[in-house]
Amino acid sequence: MAKKNPKFIDGIGIAKKIRKEVKADVEKLLQGGKKPPGIGVVLVGDRPDSATYVRMKEKACKEVGINFFLHKYPAQVTEQEIVNTIQELNKNDNVHGILVQLPLSPHINEKNVLEAVSYEKDVDGFHPMNIGHLAMKGHQPKFIPCTPKGCLELLKRENIEIEGKYAVVLGRSNIVGIPMSLLLIDNNATVTVCHSKTKNIEEIVKQADIIVAAVGRAEMVKKEWIKPGAVVIDVGMNTIEDNTRATGKRLIGDVARDAVEVAGRITPVPGGVGPMTVAMLLQNTLISAQSHYTK
Image 1 (cartoon, rainbow, N blue to C red):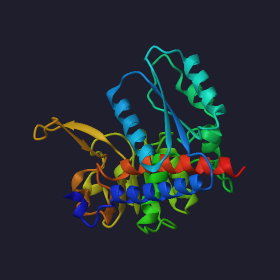
Image 2: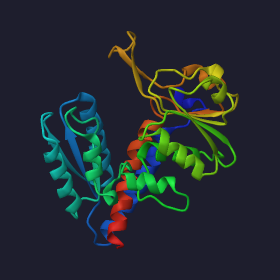
Image 3: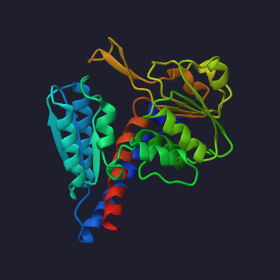
Image 4: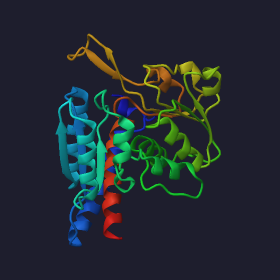
């Protein structure tokens, strides 16, 4: 239904095109006598949401010809065991990308684990080396974090002008907000980052030509906050109760659903940014394999 509205940016359709492109490039590697790209995934514990995300990534990898190596551990696994696994994956020439599914168990230091991943295999783009290069003018990161990269790809593939525009990013997480702001700056937007301590957020958002909402608060951004014609990228994925659904739940974004009435373009939830995150993971893994074979 929502996808038929011309204002909606079709993340599912764009992600499908990218997967086809990745699959074609994987086939070129194989035709050239190279091994297929491979990704090593570390999953800790039995959180249903984490297990679902990993299954989605495995399915997507298989569809495009990327080998998927899952290393699953119980919640009580030690931090050192996880680090040891990552160090083995760093040395494995069949593995071109490493992904640690978050969150980890409370007793495990997430920072130590993520920094154990070689930045040359950091297809999630979270290593300080990759974020550092992203932040520095004239530098090129090996990998860009998947969700912000997907957001930027949506803007570019929809031919939405970024240069000279005023962009507001809601949220300052290492996963989305900070790298998203850096990408927009790199594409010559003027950027403001808003967070929980920002005053007069509504007035700031009202000025934006491009809004990226990534705060994890259901429908925080109201229709009245949005300048008519603004482009809205809704990264939020919030589950709320809905007795009309068989599951009793519904997925909504950080932006109010009626915002479509004033926005020029907007990503739906679901079906907007989510599919792009997985597509960018596939693309990053392919890039890593291509880089490995051209050394």
